[in-house]
Length: 176
Length: 428
Image (cartoon, rainbow over all chains, first blue to last red; front, top):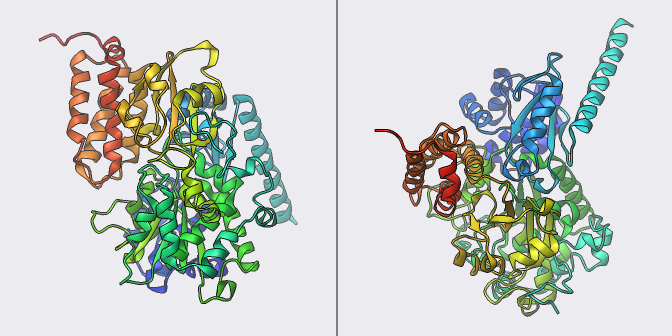
């Protein structure tokens, strides 16, 4: 599927590394998988392994090791709040608790509409701009810094409306 | 020109985008002499001459270890080819956010430094290993690399010589350990980011088993101005043994957190009170962590505040300068809580390869969690100290060694905080 859908990008990725060191392309290829589905399932691992000539176990161990690769489904948007020491000294823990409370979930959980997973993460190199979080989605990663609970929630509502709008468009297209 | 003791009249050498906001545009960067140094080395200098200048500048690695950069380059094995340069842009130490600002604001100076390093060791391929969270930065670096190729500053037969250079970005995916250079190389090869047993070191056995120099982003960003202005100019900034400018990352309980580029040897007092504006809400400063979460806690008194921040002076306070990520702790902060934060961090980030770190960080976090939730007795504090002591000196890489720094220094230097958090002696 990757090879057909993203042929050009797969080739561009493979060209970065010496031909005899294809395994180096495993992480970039896994990012391509995330772009489609935000979760790396067994089928995609098999495919990546096949492209690189390594075992699925090798791919699975890479997926398990790195925190940005998810093998279990979560929200469409992963709201990852840094609560590490420097951010915590600027109120990041309280920020995350209040945000979760307003969303009606516990840290680590996903909102009932399946859109947002809020999770604490380790340092994101934005210590001077806490509270902050990144949003990981199929579109990549985006930083949001110097946050208050209010503007974080309005950002979340904005994304929710956007998804509803896209859903509406798709339904209309399917109908036509 | 630059006064090392006060930084008065100091002009940034690394964070130059603060003076020239459009510096991430190649034309602007070239207007200020950009890529003149790279052209100069490729067209008029022998590779070893470049290494010699960097050696005599006294530049030391800015990633934390402070190892002399030119010396590292000179270790490259000339009997095995090809050679590689890998820029370490994995910036993940809690309290560190300088490489990010450099790559966002002044990316071409970093790329030029990387290119000069590649020429010095005759590498024709260089990689930038960025932490996965720097997704956007990696996208802009890709565009900037393309711009350089179109301008004839990267690619084949540069400046009509036989030298060619390609630069590629490579994204990690969330693992602190990949900042350790051999773990970074393993990760680049598509494996788990676990440190290698050393020796051999990367200059003889690095990426894909080939001779490799791994340098931090800030380190490489120092190189173009050294080539442009010479080693003597560089040595006039900073101190004799720690020459040059440094980006100090200031965070924690401070009025004006942020990056401050100052000469090495600037005092803690100047950074925290003059530049950082002191402690919020009229609080008083209690401790300093100078190297991010990987720091011994420095109890603050006048002597500590007047200590110059350089590689030689900070150890006199029983701590290290490391990446110069200064986290300010005020009197509202409970030290056992702080230790529990760092313990959970290192437990999460331990790669699991060596036993003292994998098991030790787990037990340290378990005990400190007991202390901060009021379920501990005073003997638990001694037990925590003992576990930390047993980890020390026994790990495969620095991660485990870093993990014990806050614990041992916290207990030894702030014991009353721990006693207050426990429920007296265990009854026998």
